[in-house]
Length: 223
Image (tube, rainbow, N blue to C red; front, side, top):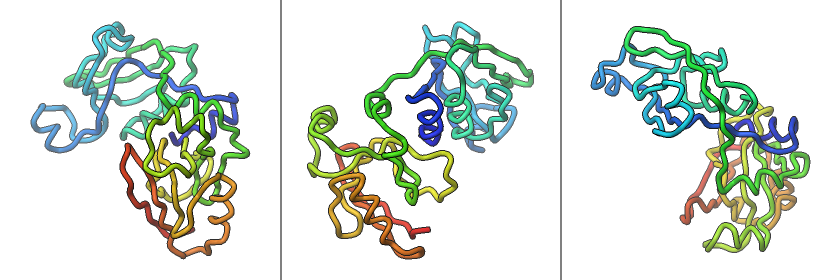
């Protein structure tokens, strides 16, 4: 979700594309076991049989070298290329298959998931908590209904990271629900922003977060 903020500012809502394939980063063990031509980078792990990638000729074990002429070495770099891709254009993938380089053009389709309603409702100016580098929205009654049973009824929902801000990774993820900051309960984005503003650089931040139905702590030092 690193590119959510940029997309919201540019388009007013979030465009995300997929190509009907998934990839994972290559490890030394993976490369050795599959006899891949290189031991680093990103390899295609699945191609949906009826998806656009399959129709374009992408295959499992293809190594992705670039996407839209952006060099791909990690999964985040591939995600970034897809977030920045325009829906009305073909995704250009340069791949390595065995020892042969190939270029494949794949139609992009819009990706939809349970976060779409949240993302499209975000106002980036009101939702940005700059010191955490995230976008968040209040946990309303409507959202509680959409999200199902929650362990703690109050909090704010993280909907993405703000790509334009150079901040350390706090460990927060999209769809996390922040219930507490240190020992203070959180009941609104404004309340969280105010509390964050009182923390001095170098002081500890401990967030109680609900993720996938479980509670956990996310901790870091404030920049």
